[in-house]
Length: 237
Ligand code: PGA
Image 1 (tube, rainbow, N blue to C red):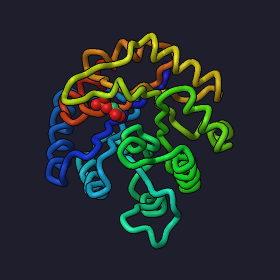
Image 2 (image 1 turned 60 degrees about the vertical axis):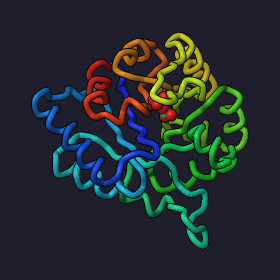
Image 3 (image 1 turned 90 degrees about the horizontal axis):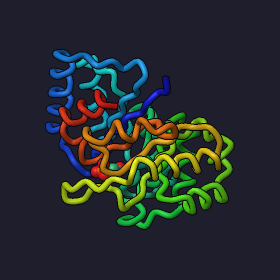
């Protein structure tokens, strides 16, 4: 049975109090209906400000979830106001999303920036969760960073077409067949590795993506903000 990765991308949502409540509600529900996580890895990616508290709560509540970040600095350290480096994150997370299309769109992040971030993450043993919008972007990454192929097994790839990302509460997923086709092309290019799908995944459509042979999990935005909906996704996966 393939191992599935379910990654909650909370984006710029949730305060410390909200996070505590999410984890508490998640935990209460799991107590009543235990999860079978034999073949599933659950990862929650909140904002930097709550990483430490999320770790603390997850441990206290005895939750089998890992904590991830949504971004890191492309610089090692120094005079880069506002930046959070891989070294700072090392003790807080095991995963980190990189190259999300929203970072490219709103913060001008380039392919070279993404490659620099991946180098730092791999150096600090944080698993990069690399978002790929299309196959030409993958090609650009492959040309810019030898790590993409040489260390592909240490990277989780996400095929996430920007048009499929939910907006204003509205879901507009890619078709599972198209997602599978593109995930297959990514595997052909870089070798056998984990490819997740991202874009409007929810509890109603998750099983149609996970039944596709090339899809090993999902990056979930909107639907992960509600702990009970995220739990339904995990169950229906
Ligand atoms: P969505 O977001 O699930 O709300 O479409 C996914 C993402 O942007 O990572």
